[in-house]
Amino acid sequence: MKKASKSLQASQELQKQWHDQKAVLILYQRGQKVWVLEPVAPRALQDKWSGPHIIVEKKGEVTYLVDLGTARSPLRVLHVNRLKPYYDRADLTLLMATDEGQEEESDPLPDLFSSTEQDALVEGVVLAECLTAEQKDKCINLLGKFSELFSTVPATTSWCEHTIDTGDSMSVKSKIYRQPDHVRDCIKQEVQKMLELGVVEHSESPWASPVVLGPKPYSKDEKREMRFCVDYRGLNQVTKTDAHPIPRADELIDTLASAKYLSTFDLTAGYWQIKLSEDAKAKTAFSTIGGHY
Image (cartoon, rainbow, N blue to C red; front, top):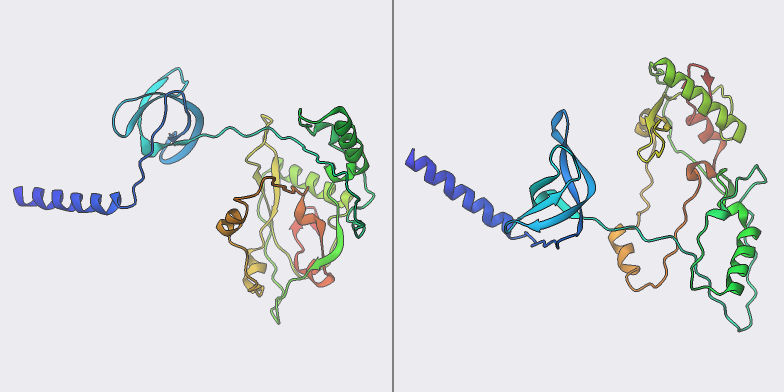
């Protein structure tokens, strides 16, 4: 037994040495917000991040007393491996800079948006407090001029279309999945919405993929919204992949390190905004109990 105990201790020390080579010392301050990794009841082997919670004090070299805010156990001592920093999201602001110099003529912007019904969200844009009254008026006029950019109705572009190369493969037809009654009603509503928007149309294609519904992870309502998904695994197996390289995320972040302003675009239903070729329309057909689209 002594020999086995010594062998186990030596093995543990060796593993610790290998682990400590890449270990990073993380220190938290009193009052700092953190995420906490907690088990999901009743699944003891499944964890999730919860928070933010507040650091009360440091108990040991690698342990902290955390205020979880629960009635059962409001304070708990946790290992640093079960914590990670929480960062508050910055408020959305819109900045506008003016140049007194002569403006250069530029090519007109393409008309990427259709004249469908628009539900503008211009009123939700927050203007920075540092702007003058004149600059705010210019921003409001500019937002009103391009209010279609803030629409919740997906637009479309005519600049390109998406094609799917399956070579000489035979058409793939998968059986529809069995769905409970309340899910069937959701599927009918989603299909009807897409028909009204012109996103889908009735089809007679020999290709068919099944439909699944999954809850959206960031639904704010008590009744979680459902996401309409098509299971294209059968189509993907016969599709020739594009070898064009995708930019690396870490390299893109490095290029933004010295930037003062970052602009992002959040497209409404971005996958709907690129048209499919006639051949791709047939291959992306899906089936529900109510029909083939």
